[in-house]
Structures are given as C-alpha cells and as structure tokens.
Length: 338
Image 1 (cartoon, rainbow, N blue to C red):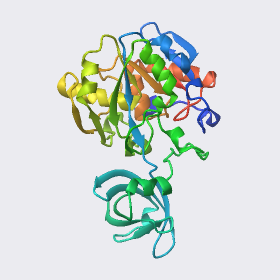
Image 2: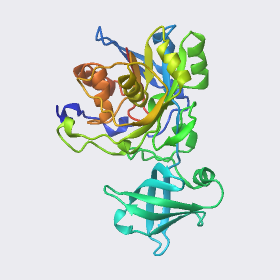
Image 3: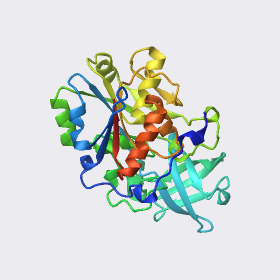
Image 4: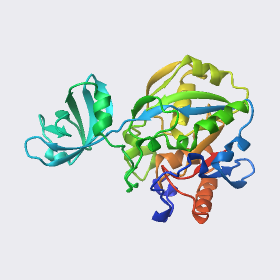
C-alpha cells in the first residue's frame, strides 16, 4: 500500500482559512457505505441522520495556546516554541524553530520575561525538553502569552481563540483541536440529546503527529507518534449499554475507542498512550458511524477514513467535494459516514 494512493488534487482556495460565524452552518456530506449513495446537506441537519439509542462520542480535550514566540536571552534571536507534552512538573517536550540556534542551557524568554524556557535536553526532529521558569500559575501565564497552534495551511490570524476549541472542550492538553467537533453548538448538542441520543466523552490529547507528514512511500513503514487518552467508567458504561450505533465524532475519538476496545474486547475505564495506526484492511471493533472533516492528501487521517469505508468510495467523495466547493481541513466542512 502506497502513500501516493491517498493523494488528490486540491485548489488552495478550498482550504478554509477562517471558521464560519455559525459553527453548525457548514456543509455536510452524507455517505452510505452500503448503497454508495452520497447526500449533500448542512451540518445543522445532522439530527436527521442520528437515531434514538445511538451514542455520540465526543473528544473533550482542550487545546493549549501552545505556540510561543520569544527570543534567546543572550543574543535576541527570534525563537518559536511549540509545547507538546508536559513531562513532569515544569518540564515540557517542545518543538523548536530554528533548532540550530539552541544549545543545552539556552534560555528563551517570552513577553517581558514573564516566562522563560531553559533547554535541558536536545533530541532529533527539532524536539527539545525545556524547564519552564515563571511566577504564579503556569496556565494563566501561558494563556496570556501563547497563541493557538494553528496548522501551517492556515495563514489567516484567528481573531477569537475559542473558535479553535469545541464548545465542550474540558481537559487541557492538545496542540491541535479535534476538528470534527468544531461543528457542534451547545444548542445542537441539546437537540441531539432530546431526540434520545446519548452523549459519551473520551479524551485524546492531539500531539505531534498532527504536524508530521508521512515521509515514507510504503504506508506500513510509517510510525505514529503516541498520544495520551483516557476514558472514565461512567462513559465506558454508556458505551457498553448502547442500544443503537456508536457514532464517533472525529478520528481522535475513533482511535481512542478502537484502542480501548481492542485491549479489553469491551469498554472499561482506562488511560495511557496510543500509537494505533488505522489504514485500509483494519477491522473496526468499536465504531459504527463516523463524523469527520475533509483531510489532507496522503495523511494518516484520510487513511483512517478510507479504512472505515472503501478507499475508492472515499476518494470519489473527495472528488465530489471539490466539484461542489466544500471547504477543506480544520475549519472546513464535514462528512458523515454510516
């Protein structure tokens, strides 16, 4: 299986640069795996495709304002730091640019010195470990100085930070949003619940893999980066007692559900790190239907979606989306596969 098998042409003007004013007003493409039928709709009508007894699974991770722009304390050189994982206490795994300016002991300062990062370890691929130096509460300092870590294909400035958060974001720790959930409003979730659909939450903190393209042509040679996940017993019970379909919102929720179900052959309280890589040929054990966005060419995300249906069906749907000028990627339109 080749990475190039998942390539497609996309006009740059179809890459959504800003979120819509109304989250739920995005387009919705509905794919029926059995019939091969494609329906064009809008996301606010997602309730027409859900059923009483279904369980809608949302990833409640919250995005860190993880992009920090600072200077080297000794030379004044510009440095960009992206927080990835909190390793212990004030020690963070980060992605730094440019790496060539960093040595052990280098101190990077942000704001008016309110936050400093001291390099204590240098790894490969631009990754370093830093010790954070500050006064007060770290996340309050970070919220003041940090920017949302928007993907590189988004070049417009985000005016309101919370538009890169889901309305149900709770557990802080991601460096990217679980973007399929950006289409939901509080009112729409309430409407879903009133029709007899239960809501279950998982947590998966989206990590470095979001920013790393597949560099190998043989799909099987690609190594996924690990990401932290968790599921409470309360939510495990909701999933185990589902009377209808388990409808996963996003690839992150899907990877979490499949990781846990593969481990226990059911759902149980669990947390840990997953590097599960889902591509065509994978047999889904936990998820019956999927809400997702339109993803980058040759990405692990389009491979997961292709595994959930037939690759040819998905690639045809993407061609249909470009013809109908759907908006692509993080702030783009949505797809429901049932």
